[in-house]
Length: 141
Image 1: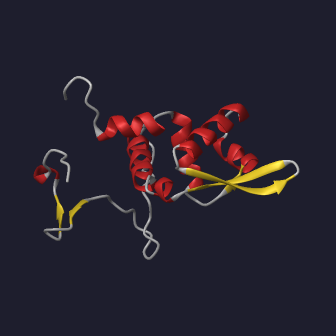
Image 2 (image 1 turned 120 degrees about the horizontal axis):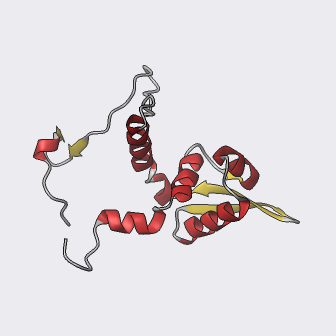
Image 3 (image 1 turned 90 degrees about the vertical axis):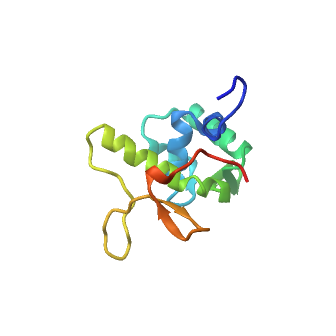
């Protein structure tokens, strides 16, 4: 990589590369949540840190705040379409982290049979699953 050039991973990390932002996105994958419910689901996050992360994620278009009370102002937080696009990446990262920690894999389950799902690269042009050995360098269309 050349000095000063950015990769897709650089761009992703610049947007959501801190621990709490990814955990907030993960928590919201189940649907919208109110601030206190979100804080409780995340465990040890301080309220000021959660508020800061929510403002950041809202500012970059991954989270939307929907008011449910005007006095005092209170909001429910949910993922936008862009935020939902992170679901696969967050689940893969969680599965990899669990594997590295020696914990049972946290792979998503198939609703029909209950088996763990595996991620695969798929080429829509060739209409086939691509093995790791067949992957080329990332390119731009």
